[in-house]
Each structure stands twice: as structure tokens, then as C-alpha cells.
Length: 145
Image (cartoon, rainbow, N blue to C red; front, side):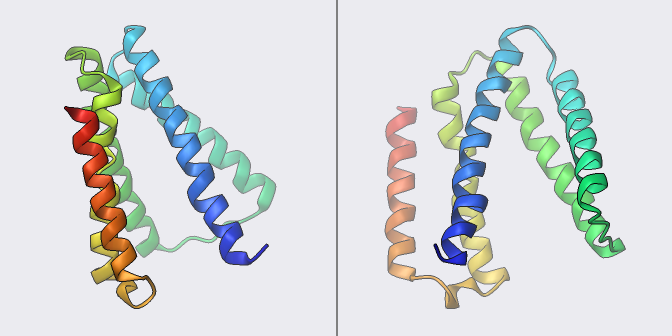
């Protein structure tokens, strides 16, 4: 198996499965009556505990202040997005099956931004990327109607 295939499995397929189940657990949490703020606090504590254990086990202590600043920004953006999702699930009874395709449109935004910010247009097949994007948009429209 090539390193790129392993990378796609570890960095694409497994996260897709884990994040799908994350959404299911998030919906169950909202239906169980927990506020989105406590949900995010508990998730944050879990992240902290797991990461501390991984750092201790692996010994990977690489850190830069610049990387830390980007991490802080990423955390703020993530908790803001998840906060809106949690609030919506608890207060507006929007079906997760309709909501998930919309907030997962972030994939399209990431594709567009990474093509330009990281010049990844040089590494991907643009026609296939456009076709896949149109399929995602079409699927999102179909699911939300």
C-alpha cells in the first residue's frame, strides 16, 4: 500500500467515520437536555485528557508560538461552529440529516481556499475537483429539500 493511500485512509476515511459518529453523539447530547456550552466543555476536557496522554506516550513535544497562535485560532473557529450546531440541535429541532450536509459544505470552502492559499491547484486534477464539488452541492441541495 502506498504512503499516499495510507495517508488517505488515516487522514480522510477514519476522520470521516469518527466525525460522523461525533455528530450522532452531539445530537444525542442535545436530545438528552445538555446545553451546547456544557457539551463543548466536556468535549474540550476530553480532548485535553486524550492529548495529554498521547503526548506522554509518544513524547512528541514539538511546539512553536506561531503554531500555537494558529491552533488558538483554529480552536476558536471550531468551538464557534460546533456551538452553533449544538445550539440549533437543542433549540430548533432541525433534523441532523438536513443540517449536516449544510455545515459539511465546509469541505467545499476548504477545497477552494487550499487551492489558492497553499497553491494545491498544482497537485490536484481540477476537472475532477469541479465535478466532485458539483456532486457535493447537488447532494446537499437534494438532502435539504
